[in-house]
Length: 138
Image: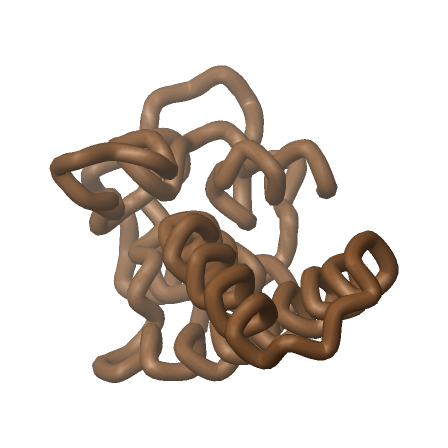
C-alpha cells in the first residue's frame, strides 16, 4: 500500500496514475478524471476534494512544528523573524507536495468503501462498458 501511495497510484487497482503531471511542475498539477487501468472515477461526489483541504492543513501544521523545532535546535534563536521566514519558505516549497498528497491520503485512507481490489490489478485494459456501481464503488 505504501508504494502505491508514495507513487500516487489508483487506490483500487494500484496500477493507474492519479496525476498526469509531476509534483513540481511549472504548469501546475493535473489530475486524471479516471484511472487508466480500472476506470475508477476519482472525484467520488461533488465537493469531494474540499476534505483534502483539511488534510493539507494537517500536513502544513505537522511540517511547521517539525521545522520550527528543528530551527530552534539548530540555532537556539528566539527571533520571530527567523521562524517566520523559514516557515513561510517551507510552506511555499512544500505546497505542491501537500496538494498532491492531501488528495492521495484522502483517497487511500479517508474514503469509506474504497479499498484495494487485487482482481482489478490484473493485466487487462479498463472496460468502457462498466456500470455506475463499478465506477463509483457504491
